[in-house]
Length: 65
Ligand SMILES: [Zn+2]
Image 1 (cartoon, rainbow, N blue to C red):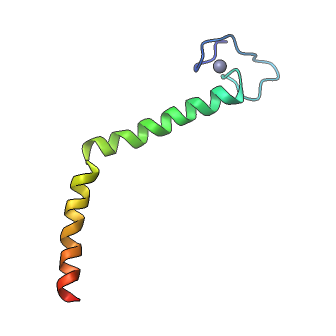
Image 2 (cartoon, rainbow, N blue to C red):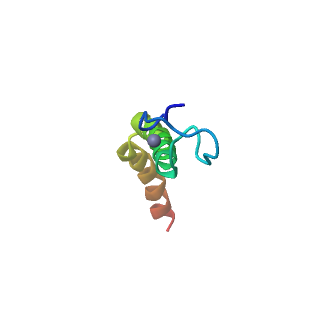
């Protein structure tokens, strides 16, 4: 079995991190998925525009205050 992260041969028997060869490769893969999930929505909604529409309600609150 090859490790999906580094493509090195990974132990199957007694390997707590399979299909990864080590805890490090497992962490890297999980981090990669988390980073991609985080990257997709921020691509469709740029933080700048989100802040701008947020600024509208902030302005409204400012008037009431
Ligand atoms: Zn690996």
